[in-house]
Structure formats: structure tokens, C-alpha cells
Figure 1: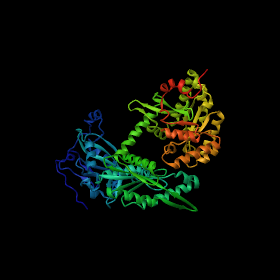
Figure 2: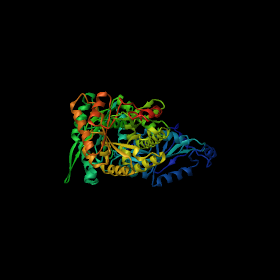
Figure 3: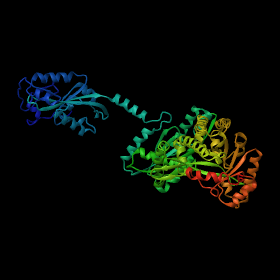
Length: 617
């Protein structure tokens, strides 16, 4: 048993009446005084807003003692130096220490890592500030920690001086455990048991407080995992994800962190990975988790693509994950099933691309889009028979941008549909204005390219009809060009949309013929009237006999199916002569005219549309 501590007369509590708390809890100051049963400082206390319990008589002491000792809640009275004065039975049950062991001793007995906190609580009470329910930990007699909610209030003498602190301790172990479980659940993925995105943020914050200055974050995506769910059902897909998570855990080093961020997107945080070993480690990791997964009678093939970013501990977790995601996007563009390590140049390019994408969404509304038109001429007479509408972006800071600089960005950002709608309406309106101003242009056609998003849009046919109706342009003068890659995205939807456009009266053109995987099937299945030979074959004319053979055969095939042929990318007289000789009806390319704004094309209509025609008599 700990011996009682003898108090000296300098202790503040010595100026108050003896606190008689029973045979085992009596603290007698060296010079006890009788005090009046009055509260001379109470009004001042109320004015200051302090939460202090005054003790001005022995009756107050006895009432306090009775209240403390009879309370079902653990109550402790301590002086301003943290020495225990009262320790009730509930405190004995909560902390395991008896009153005889604690009274007269410093409360450091039960403090864990919160000595500074306890000092702040006592000082706050001494200054007249009550504290309500600070959650903390205290040490039990047997050594384990008890989760408690601590409240404190000051006790003062008749002169208004705080001389002791009353502390209330409530056992919140079960509540804390429940809170911790809620936090754990909020930071865990229900399916795989891995940490989720929120949990990974917390893990990264924890790692940032350690000694390591850099981490490697690897984002892993199961390519086209939707196909697994579609083929076998979501239940099987979930089991594949669970097996993948297990295989991933078995493939990393102890201390590395594995998370499932969302869907089929996972992340690994590698610690202490030397740059020289990074790429080989990531390559082995991809090999370990890629492959076939057996779920019952189903076998799913999984290919995994990775994005790698080496991050400083000074970066925010969200920034670390962003950079790994950027690397993953680049990897998917280059080659799925591989990985990309992000460097500063790639990251800057991505940020620049994102900046452009944000402004591209508003380009049409802010009148920043422009149309240029490239001439299409008859192969024999070189008469102007049509134009292809090509969009440009008049960027307010970067000047005129060509389609190669923003069309793929528009497709990724979802703004391609609004841009395509603008191009369609503007092209029809421009050609109709030309026709009204120049009768020689009455036969002229305009070609407009359709993207995947536009062809899959259920409102496409309606949009085309609206553009024709508003402009007054005859449907047959509008040529809509579709590439084989656009057709392959959703062949069923494409077939339906193209049939409706044919019924509307527009002319359908298969563009970049020969570059896709099913060219002949496209000619057989879809209602095209014109075939456009891709420039990659035209450029080989006069250089590679194979290209000349392919072009000759393509022209013959198209004519056999009743299609007319346009050759694009014509840049030399030799190419134009060859294409004319093998039967191409129309030619397009820099040799015959570069893309130009409408105000440049307009003055040429009278002469170019009549080229090769007999003079009027």
C-alpha cells in the first residue's frame, strides 16, 4: 500500500476546512480554519462565466464528500498539483486502485500518455473553465488502458480562489470500440477486406509521419473487367475481384499497403523501393496478378495495366493517387497489359491537356469554333464538286488549333457531341449560303465527319433533320463520313442509325477505308454510297507496288458494289494521275487545295465549280 502523503501548510487546500471522507480518506491540513457559511465571490464568478463550485462551510465539505462517495460515476477530487483528495468506490471499480492507495498520491498513477492533457484540464479548471467530456485514456491497476470521457470543474474557497478540481470519469470503452469499428468499416472495402480510398488516405498520412521521405504508388486496373461481369454475372465478377485481392496481397512485400479504390481499380504503396529495381518489381507484380482466375466452372482471363508514380512524403495523399492515375491513363493509351512510370514531362502534359479540356467544354458557347473547308474535285475535269468541313478551335490564348490538337480530347471529355452538332449545323448553313449567292455551286456537296459518340446518340437523326430543315439544304448534298473504328464500337446501333440517315436522303461515306479490321464486312452490312481510300495507301503510290495493287483492287471492288470512290491525301501529280487512271471519281489533298476558311473558298466558287465545263454560247 502506498503511504499517505503529509501535506504542508503552504498547500492551497490547507486554507479550507478539513475534508473528512471516512476512515481511509482523511486529509487534514496543518492549519485548518473555520470559514463563514457565505458565498462572497459567487456573484463575481457568475459575471465571469466561470464554472466553479464554491465550498464555504463544513456542511459544503460534508455534502461534497457524500455526493462524491455515493455517486455511481467515478469521481475524483484533486488539488491543483494533481494530488488525489477524494477517490470514490466507482473510481475504485473503474481503475482497480483502492482509495487507500491513491489518496495523497499524484494522479500520474492512472495517467497514460496524457500528463500534458491532465495539466491543461487542471489549469483550465483553475482559471474557471469547465471541460465537458474530453475523451482520453487512463491506466488500470493491472496495466491495461481504459477509454474514458473526462469532465472537470473547479472548486473554490469563500474568497473565490480555486483550490481543487472535481473530475468525472465515464467508461466509454464500448462506445470507443463501436466508434473505432465504424471508422474501420468506413475505411475498409466490404468485398475484399482491403483498405478503401479513404483508408488509403489515412495510411498515407500515417506513413508521412514516419522516416521515409518517398513512396511509390502503383495504380492497377483490371482491363475491360465489365466483360467479366457481363459474361459470368456480377457474383462471379465479385469473386474474381476477391481472388485478385488475395493474389495481390501475396505478391507484395511486408509493409507495403494494398487498397481497392473502386470497381476494378486497386493501388499498392511500395516502401523503400530503390529506383533501379522499381520497373522490374512492377513488371513481376503485373505478371503475378494477371492471368486466369477459376471461379467454380467459370474461368476468367484478367489483364492488368499499371500506372506508377514516385511521390514525396510532402505531397498530399490525393495528389499521390492523382499522379498514379495519370500514369495509368498513359499506360492504357500506349499498351494495355503494361505499365507507365510517370515523369515530370508526362505530368505537365496531362495537366495541360486537362486545362484545355476544361475550356473546350465552353468553346462552342463562346463562339470559339471555326470551320475550314478542303476542296474535293472531280478526278478528270478537276472541277470543284464538294468540300469537307474541318473544325478548328480559335483559342483565346493559344491561337488557332487544328483538330489533331483537341478532337481526341473532346472525345475523352464528352464535348465531342456538342462540337459535332455545331459543325453539322454550320456546314449545312454555309453551303446553302454559297448556293444562294452562286448558282454554279448548286451541285456542291459538303462532307461532315461523325464520331462514335454522335453515331451512338439517339438524337442524331433528329439533329441531322433539324440542320437540313433550318438551312434549307437538300439532303443529298450532305455527305456524312464514318470510319470503320466508329462502326466497330457498336455495330448494331450503327446499322440502325445509318439506315435511318439513308432514309432521310443523306449520302453515307465510309472513311479511311482499309485501315480497320472488317472493311469488307462494313461494305456489305452498311448502306454506304461512297468509299474514301485512306491516305496511307495513296502516299505509297509511285513508291510501293503493294499500295498501288491495293488501291487498284479497292477501286474495282467499290465499283463492283455500286459505290463511287474518293481518294484523300493526294499530294503529287503522279498520285493524281494514277488514281484517275484506275477510275477514282474524286480526289482530295494538298495538291488540289488546302483547308481554308469560308471567306477564302467563297470567291473561288464561280470559277472552280465551272472548271472543265464547256463555255456557254
